Image 1 (cartoon, helix red, strand yellow):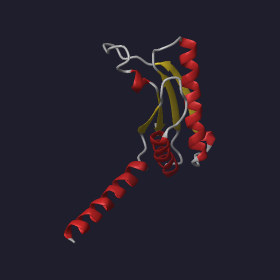
Image 2 (cartoon, rainbow, N blue to C red):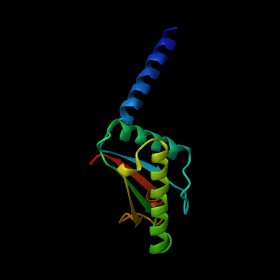
Image 3 (cartoon, helix red, strand yellow):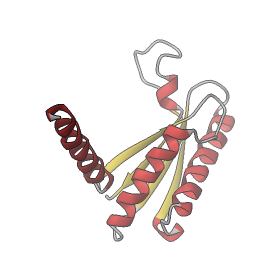
Image 4 (cartoon, rainbow, N blue to C red):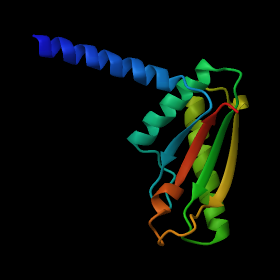
Length: 134
């Protein structure tokens, strides 16, 4: 019985921590994508929902959605997929209740990290960062 009580208390703390995290301004919420895709998976949808809660909890803070791509492909194609990803995430934030007027989208095109092996940084470059706050 003590174990069950302890587990329930721990679960309550986890819920509290998740709620606190969801309302944190000045944070980046990353949404990752597969190569050449702008489809949001279940992990991305969860991250967007948390970012939307943070945005709604801080209605005066801006929401900046920055799309990126990896270094595979040409500059124009990478810029296009980065913009598409940013727009898809912005649309999902709006669907979660964030007013479109608060959301700015930016596309950085390809991101690369100096000194990393080709492809090792790619999975982290294919992302959108949602920034709530300044």
